[in-house]
Length: 354
Image 1 (tube, rainbow, N blue to C red):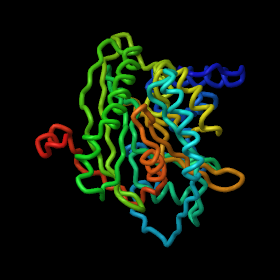
Image 2 (image 1 turned 90 degrees about the horizontal axis):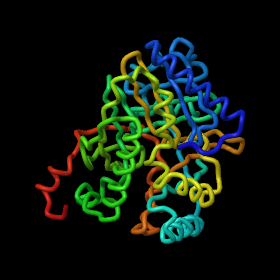
Image 3 (image 1 turned 60 degrees about the vertical axis):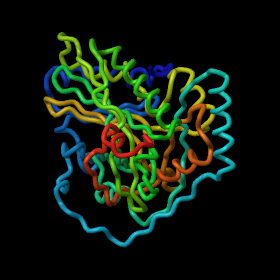
């Protein structure tokens, strides 16, 4: 579900889709990025991905010769200068007003945060510990925890992530899963992703519902809530990954529902260009296709570095915790330590709160 594109952007998108389809059908490994609005997609065959221009590491699939090295963390500083609560509240209130008018029932509201650090974008890429990392020279670095879709054979899976809480909050896992607003938001996204997958798959089901992953950042630890939605592609599917991406984008977890009217609200409320932030990055290794949502994203702009972050807004949202979530997501994942997932069924048995 892409917006109406200008001719040049449409040509770029057509070339991108054609390349992914052709390489997929020929089993040629490739890597790609797609911006939020689908206007500046880029794709490279693996043998053409110059590490002097772009570096990536997607769950171990990488063109980075230092991927297996253990790097020591240097002395560094990291300071953020976010928009004020009052500025955020104006945007939040605009979104809530549209939700109450029935124009949307879930909106992902984001904002740019200027940051200062003595680290370069390549430094941040090399030092970050995240399952999906990408650096594009003089443009951005992304270190995402959120897998978008994975295609292995005929099975397609998506992993929407909605719900974040600081891990040092007492009983944090139980609290995040018991929160009615968070539960409603997550259910909405799972339903949206299930509907999206139904456009390309013949059978769709929820494989896992509301499990938690723990992420350690340079500031604190976070619990994040995800689900897994799966489906079966038609028997005639033959590696046309470009066609599938075009039907599924933008990702529901970083736009909202319904997509067309929600994207209009996002444009009016945010007042800035997302660019590659909340787009998609991924790879095909000749067998498995895997992609990630481009969140946890730092962009180089003429005036300095900008960290873009956001969160989902529903009718039940309260402005204070939403503002705090936006701030919590401005971090460097220098101590990423994934732990065994905590599943909702386990927590239900553990605590009567859930």
